[in-house]
Image (cartoon, rainbow, N blue to C red; front, side):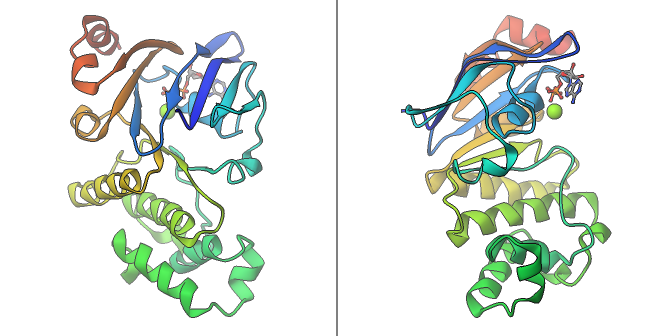
Length: 250
Ligand code: ADP
Ligand code: MG
């Protein structure tokens, strides 16, 4: 049973069909990837599913039972979802450590700044920051991190959310998490995605690097001009002539 699916969802911007009557689904314990040329609607799809943009028409279905035509960004943790952004979003003026603690505590900036953190919060923060290799940077301001480190911090925040039991995160969207990363950072993110899959999470990955897509994806959707061009096992889908043409024609 899919944990999340869409039925004919569409999103237009000034006449551009960014997402055009798309019906796809995502399963728990699987990495489902979305590829397609630039402008094919990958980010818009994630943005509609996470409440950044309202859907013009169609619906999203959670656990085969909850039908929604509208979801708001602040509601997504309630529906078990979280995400990264193609252009990383952090609390820039806060320390790296506080960027994680704010997730682990009550998700209120004030609490995480002024509350005395208990050992559990600090232990978890240390665990996730070590996992992404940022523990040494814990006392830097987020804005002073390199581009790759910023992306890793965003991932550490997701791990904190998943591991803390704050909320009950089951569906995680990653919008180009590997873009701009050094090879050793890529390895870290690959292992994070595989670990989340092993834990039974539905992982949704938007990515351009086809080697990573082949390595990670259980199921692949190819978008072109907001429409579904192909779907299936990555090795089979990436052999298809129309898929290859969509890329070469970019
Ligand atoms: P991708 O992530 O696959 O590169 P996007 O979803 O970002 O593609 O974009 C799909 C189409 O929607 C493009 O034509 C893009 O210009 C348009 N688009 C995306 N977001 C907006 C927006 N906020 N306002 C206007 N047009 C947008
Ligand atoms: Mg995009």
